[in-house]
Amino acid sequence: MARVVIAGAGYGGVVAGKRLEQAGQTFTMVNKHSYHQFITWLHEAAGGRHSADDYKIEITKIFRDPTCVVIKDVIIGLDRTASEIRGRRNSYPYDYAIIALGSAPEFFGIPGLAEYSLQLRSVETARQIHAHIESEFTAYKTDGDRSHLRVVIGGAGLTGIEFAGELIDWLPDLCSRNDIDPGLPEVQNLEAAPTILPVLPEHLRLKARSVLEKKGVRIRTGEKIVKVDRHTVHLESGEAIAAGTIVWTGGVKAHPLLSVAGFTCDRRGRAQVNDFLQSIDDERVFVVGDCAAFTAEGKPLPPTAQLAAQMGEMAGANVAAAIRDEPLQAFHPKIRGTLASLGRTAGVGVVVGVPTSGVLASMAKELTKVKYLIQLGGLRMISRNKRAFARE
Ligand SMILES: Cc1cc2nc3c(=O)[nH]c(=O)nc-3n(C[C@H](O)[C@H](O)[C@H](O)COP(=O)(O)OP(=O)(O)OC[C@H]3O[C@@H](n4cnc5c(N)ncnc54)[C@H](O)[C@@H]3O)c2cc1C
Image 1: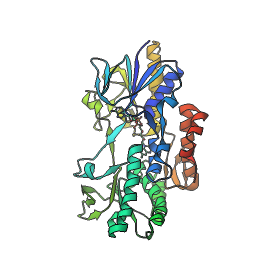
Image 2: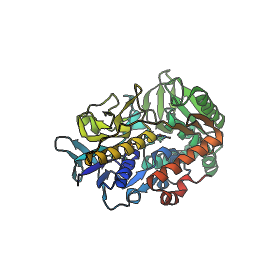
Image 3: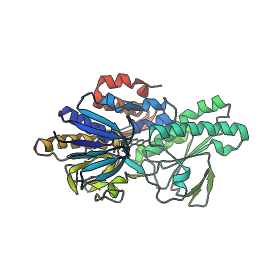
Image 4: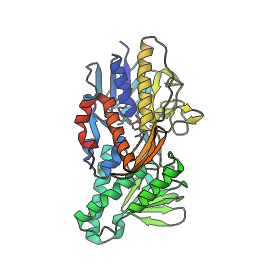
């Protein structure tokens, strides 16, 4: 039997695994945690909608087939010459590999940003952000310094906007628990570009901005962060913002292991792939999700979970086909829409080409959770994760 190794159990990796499982193909999945994380919902965990543990699931619960071996290990190298993925604990030789290691934060060389900002990237960082904000509010009670109550979010793409919405809905409860005047906390969302949510059409961006501003978020576009110190964000204009919490959501690049391993990469470190999602350097290595540079209609695909899952599905099918010596299928991405939540009960976005906003968009966003869980394992997955998508 051919040896297939999937590196990474995020959206691309687990969907690739499901496809291989369906095809009856054995595989080894190596991931640094024993669990799969629902990264697209992490703003909810950071804002305390549910416990952070509700946003993860053991990988062994997704794959029931005994032909799948799940290994917890941190991958430290990809050796194309030896056809081996190297982990801290072991090496994993392959005939076919699917690389799905996701992304790393992009700090654009801004001094102090990596050191002094928090990043919303995993269940653990969501938990950390939540605990940090709580401790800042407690610190305010001790010394009365208003900057403890100021949260600065750098970046107004999907992650920044969804986090801002979730946070602003959490603050009344946080204030009431700490006996703090609810008029005192401040959430500033800074964006260097002239607009927020570039993935959405203009009228929906305006809608999102107006909803968040009415809730109390201060959205500042065209504001470039040039330096960050402990508890201070410096803007190009010369303004310095003192803030107890600084969260950076402003950019991602591909996992650095791809360029280190010598794959041909784009400027974001994503490995160039052909129509079948094979690396252009090695046809036995398929690359998916945030690690892959795939161009459609002349434009590189954005790093999103829906595209990572679609690529995972195609890579899984193509690996199974290659092993059977059958023709591979070309990948045709389908961008079915984008939805951004704006707190616990509002949202905005486009679903199959139709613009939507308000409660309807929020409900549509909730439905994407159900759809994804069904893709992972049907109804048993929904009952297992019912808390993560329970509405307030
Ligand atoms: C807060 C947030 C909100 C988002 N919201 C949306 C949204 O609403 N819609 C949308 O489409 N996209 C959204 N995205 C983007 C989306 O989450 C990513 O595009 C998607 O997760 C990419 O999938 P992937 O499989 O490439 O990587 P990931 O899902 O990141 O998976 C990578 C996997 O590799 C593992 N890994 C990494 N390094 C190693 C290593 N060295 N060794 C072993 N394992 C390793 C990780 O633990 C992880 O399991 C959001 C992202 C964030 C952070």
